[in-house]
Length: 172
Image 1: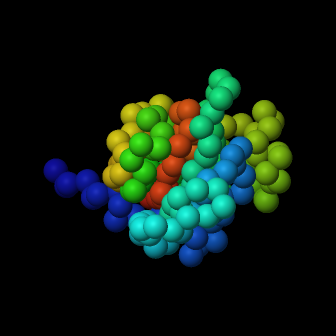
Image 2: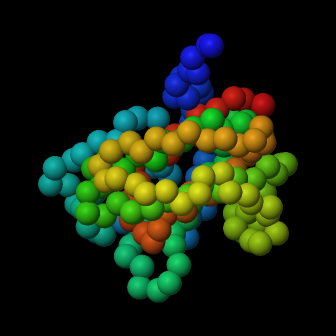
């Protein structure tokens, strides 16, 4: 029996160097959504503050005061079949989301953020809600059933900060 390779050996379909982009998020009060797919490893900057609070390297939403959850939509730079994901909460200790899930879709062209976040887009569950640990890369194998995807929606429950999202898979 041939050992299955670690999915992190596969390309990061959401890599910014391949043209991926975070096209929408419902909130990015403390830190911008674009940091989710930065190629560099997350970093800590002691004593650095912005007009919104402590500088954090990643996407961070404000505390929710209403029901629901926060989300960000990523257009993959390389459409393909997802084999595994890393939801990295490095340096987010008390403000990481306790749970996350991923949805995916396969749409042609360059749909607008409004179209992608509407109920018209056919999203399907890629990763059911899972528990996350703080200040660490959280890795999850994915069985996508061979479905090609072009976009992902990262849902965090209910709010918090995620340093990086890595989406490894086969380019299709």
